[in-house]
Image (cartoon, rainbow, N blue to C red; front, side, top):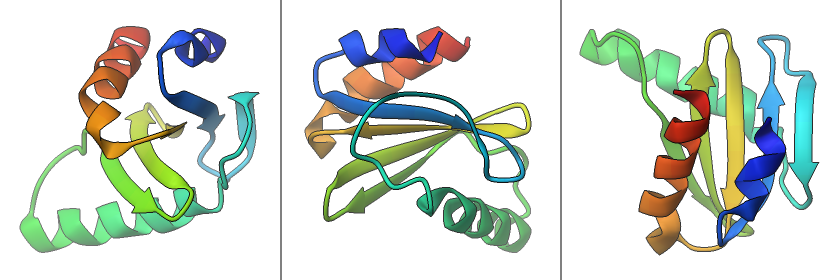
Length: 99
């Protein structure tokens, strides 16, 4: 399923991570999944502070390139890609896959 995201120009690695932090599925190489628990914590803090409902995605621009975290039920899809200006294309592909 997530393997097809590697066909999108610029995407280097994708991983589906469960609530316990374990990899459910993975394709490609070069991403550090340790950002997922931290990303979930940031989203939880922001939701509590802002009183908002569900989150859509979180973009982290790290040294090795941007990482998009997208919720999928109780799992998170991590998508590592080459440049921030590819975000629109990456978000479209992720939403089409998960939609």
